[in-house]
Structures are given as structure tokens and as C-alpha cells.
Image (cartoon, rainbow, N blue to C red; front, top):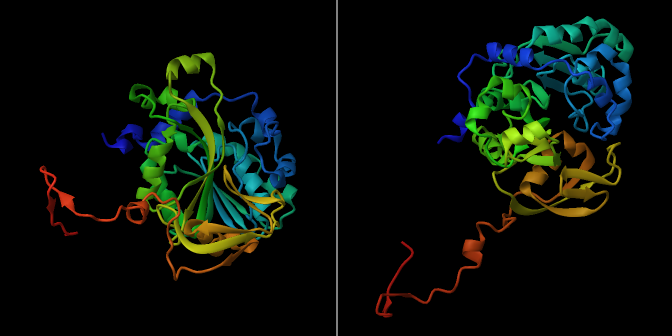
Length: 364
């Protein structure tokens, strides 16, 4: 079966998101979660939460805040922004020279963000607004120009999408070259049974629509994102009722970085390059977190694959890296999944027939 069909529902996205909103009641614990007891909001952003209206936070449904480093001056798109907490948080991180577009399918939720619009901009000390709020769905971003966005963020809403391929395709289209999709979401270790995955009420609980992480890699690579990376991962807590419903399906919450880059490949190819992180990011003075199990220590020259050097040399992250080397010499597959077939091949001594007699053979 086509894995894409596993996650796709035959619905109009606008109608579908209205059903999801009706099935997802307001969470009275939302404000407490924004205080970040679990340390899931970057330190650079934590203090800025206090500039955001309590009602906005009370209507916000998500944990943490997927805010990557180096957002200043960027144009950011916040997908399914809800009441706008992350939109207004990002607005402070991009500064007055940047811009944040908050897009939300549900007009009632977006009205909360709109209600405090002038108050928030004044609270940030900006002379002119750097936020735009619009009603819309991620599967159709036609109101946003091709290649106009530096960073797309989303907070545990990709799993809601009824057409994940359309979602990914639109994110790729609106991003600039070397732009970044940086988001947090729930993923699974196997596909959720279809009878659960295609039920709107189950989708609204943020579990049934979660994507098998292997299918996510297939999907993004098929749509131009070569090298998804997973910065943080932790088990998604389940209630007893949820565990009974989903059985052996394991859930984890992942923070994901995906670059739109012509400098990345679908596997890690080596060109003998090194990168050195300068330690200047406020939340990462001792190391740069590239993936959950890969850290680049400050001041240390690290041999890397071309996908890492692509990020370090051609994206906005080039501000904090020194790169030595170029692409003139190809060294091979970093993990030796492919070149081992050649490098470790035994010496040819001929092929023998069923009577153990040598016969001639060629490579073609």
C-alpha cells in the first residue's frame, strides 16, 4: 500500500480543521505549561513569554516552543498558530526588522491573537507591527509567495494535517533556498492502525495522526528535503486509556530541523571538510546541537559530511561556523553503507560452475 495514503483523509482541509477544533476543548493547564517546567523552551525565549497576554497563553494548546537559533531579521511562518503564543514569541526573537506570519485554520482561535495585536506590538516596543495574522490551512499557502520565508515553525500540528504531502509540498515552496522548517511534533515507531488514524476525534487528540518516522523521511525526501535531523526526542506520555487504544504503537515527541538546500544529499557523503563552531549562540555556549546525539564542541575542528557543511557554510548558521574544505574531492559515503560494496569487495578469482570448474566472467 502507498504509505502516503495511510495518512491522507478525503476531506476539505477547511472543514476538517473546523471539526478538529470542535473536538479539541480548551486546556485549563495551558498557562502552566507555558512556564516551561520541563525545559522545552529555549532560554533565549523563556523570559519573553511574560510579554504575552495571559488569555493568549490560556487558549494555547501546545508544550514547549520550537524556536531555532539565529531568528533575528528573519521572515517566519507559524503554521496552525492557534491563539498566537508562538507567533508573538517569534515576533520578539526576529526583532523589528523581521516579520512573523501567523496562519490558523480556526477563526475563533485566531481572534484571540488579533484581540491583543496592538497591545503586544506596544509591549515589544516596536514602532511598526512585525506580525501578520491570517486565516488559512497549511495544505494551501497560496496567499504566500514562493521562496519568501526564511523559517517555518509549527508546534505539534503537523500530526493534525489531513494531507501531509500537500503540507510538506507547500512548506518547501514558500521557503527560501537554505531556509529551514523547524518544528516539534509527535511521531511513531510504527504506523497507527488506519481505523484509528482516519477518525477525526482521534486526530484531535494529537496521537492518531502522528506519522511513522520512517514514512516522514520518505515523504520529505520525495518533496525536496534531503536530510531531516532530529534534535530532541522524548517519550510522549500516554494515559491508560490511550495506551489501551493504541496498543503496541510507541509515541515520541521530536524536534525536527529540515533544510531546503541544494547542498544536501539523501545520504551523508564525505568531501573531507571540517567545521568549527564559535560558541556564540546564547543558549549553546559549549556546543552546537546538530542532532540529538551529535554535538559540535566550541572551538573544535570536526570532520563532517557534506550535509553538515552545507548547513554550516550556506544557511544563516554560517554566522557561527568556520568551514574548511570544498567539494572538489569526493571521499565517499560517510557511513559506508554503499561504498563498502566496492571497498570491501573480495578479489576476483573467477566464477565456478556446478562442477567447481572455473568459467570466464566479466563485469558486463
